[in-house]
Length: 285
Image (cartoon, rainbow, N blue to C red; front, top):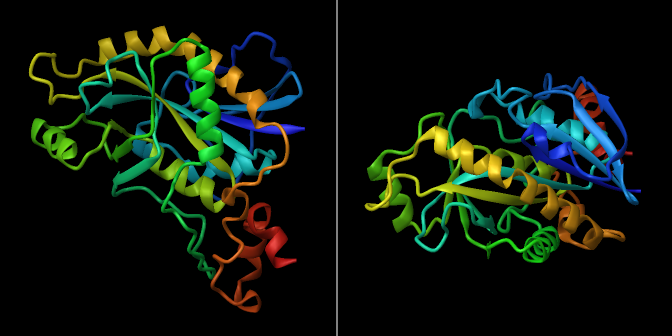
């Protein structure tokens, strides 16, 4: 059965038609995930949901255990991850309420582990194109089918947070050509690639950051209001994308580690092999 993971707000798993719902609390070599995983069936697809910040939004972006979250998805058999989240717009044409399916990333984080490797093993995965083009195309088609205003492509700048940008930073990021700004996507994309999971983002624009002269600065109440309005739309887009993911994966994401592991197998510590077995098993057997 095709298994799709969804990371975002806890309301996403309240989908019409979701059956056989069950929850899992997992332990990982990297600590505890953000919360319990919620799994269910939607047609012929198994969906696995995880609230990124925990139920009740308890975790700062810098406190999210991204490694545990993605590792748990891998253990549960997830091959595709759709990341849903709020972003600020850095372009006039991306208005609050619009959807963006980015195709590039800029990293402005500095406090977060971003790899499963270390502890006796080195691997360097390709990350030139950080999002899965197949999954992104499915999201774009589903968003268009749901009647949303969706922007195909663009650069997601991931900042550390939890504070929003200064005005100087916002103008700088626009000069760099970034399209949207958020606080969570970079680590999820890197770790999904290392775990050979296809990854794409459904970004919900909620504001114009603080660069726009005729718009107010970012106000969290307004961000939450627009985000709440778009929850049902996000559910429709996720549900619409799933039938487009049928069949075996043919993209490079599924083979990301094929030539990436540098360390001689005989020199990898046994504990590291055991810890990373869901990710490395097929390459170390």
